[in-house]
Image (cartoon, rainbow, N blue to C red):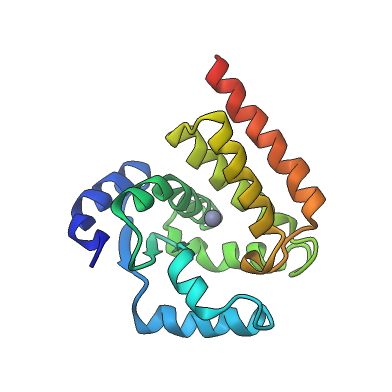
Length: 185
Ligand SMILES: [Zn+2]
C-alpha cells in the first residue's frame, strides 16, 4: 500500500481540477481483466505486467493508478488524467463525464482509424500532456525528456500505435514550444 495512505489528500487535489474524481488502485479484477484486453489488442506487444505497473488511466471521473506508484508520481499525473475527465465531460455535453465516456472512447480508439493514424487519440493525449506540463512546470530539459518518452509511447504499443513517430514528434514539439513560451512570459 504505497499511495493509498494519501488517498484523501490526492482525491482532494484531483477534485480541484474536476469535481467528483475518485481514485482507485489498479490492483483489482476490473483492471486485471482490462490488462488481458490490452495484451490481445496490442498483439502481445504490451505485456500485462508493464501495463498494470506503469500506466494510469481515466474512465470518466474514475482514475486508476498503479498500486506501487508513489504519492508524488500520482500527484504529478493528476492534472493529466483530470484533463481526460474534462474532455470526457465535454463529450457528454457537460451532463456528466460518465455520459461522455462512450463517445470519448469511440473518438479515442476509432477516429479516423484505430491504428496508424488515430489522430483523435494523439490530440486527446497531447491536450492532457499540455495540461500536465502547465501545472507541474518542469524545467525545459525535463520537459524535453518527457516529450521524447511521450513520442515513443504514443507511436508505440502502449497507445496502440496511434500515429507515426515523425508526426507525433512534430506535433509534440509544437506543444513543448508553446508551454515553454509561457515560462518566458
Ligand atoms: Zn493520457
